[in-house]
Length: 437
Image (cartoon, rainbow, N blue to C red; front, side, top):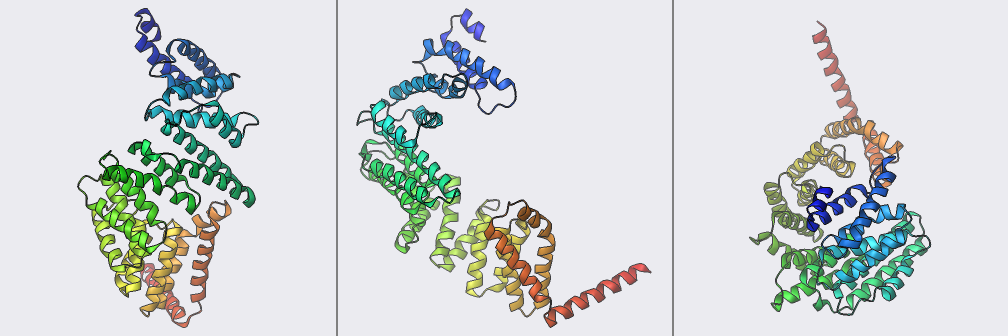
């Protein structure tokens, strides 16, 4: 295809083919001995592309995808410089879709080079990129890229139990977000505002950082109110409601609940957003102890979304709500459904079996409660023991598992349970005797 495009002097096809070759041969996820050979070929085709097409449609994609191969061939700094020029060109646009990926790739590659730190990168962006003040979108993406870099360091510090550095990096995150919040957000279009708000919401490590997303969603809604831009309204309402829902402040949770109900009932809301809104309404109602709302929304959720991945959590909220309302039969139905669908997932089935046992004891059937617990332990013991041995079960779940086993063992000496066990043995022996004949 490359030779054909050249013979035909078709620059459009040639640029596209070279782009594809760099993308294919420069794939960093390759394994085996061929990777280095392919990287050399990727660099070869990059060198054929760049002098001729570095101002064309594929420049950003080629500049980004060639980085691993260029680095492997001792040309990482050259690749970064070329990517930098692409970023500066794209930054003049309002929302060039490739700019996000380009800036994130630049940040990632810069930090991979020996001795480079996020603080150095921050100064590099400030002094080396020369973004004009009106390039608000590009400057916002740079801030978000730095936020990601500092968040990664904070997470690493947390994993190493280095609380001092964790706090240090989280302060750096907050500093970037504070600067971002001082930008003239009215210069950003609704797509950019939602993109930044969602990014903060999905990656925040602290409540303070998480809540900083509200400014971007609120700017979208301000734009809508002033008829500047009505796009992405529902996404902003949804994002803002999610943030407010997590504040655990009743007034804000009530506002979130009302917004989510509006979204859920709006005919233009897409099905995926309606499903998530409906689910969060159940969780919010439970957090606010509005048990009747939990029951109403939970049952309608099961009806509308029978195969939803959120269904088990909705059943949990329903079970607790029925239990707290004193409707033990319906609570038992929900908990037993969880046991059937998620037996091997202890974070769901563990609390469910404890509730089943508690309710069954309350129904004056201690042996039935014991049997339910014993059957659960027998069914899960092999898988859960292996998960603990392999270090794959979180400590909180391991504690829950021990609690369930202790509770079952603790019932074995109860006179009612002992009688039930003996009766079950007699029935089994009688059955064996009959079959033996």
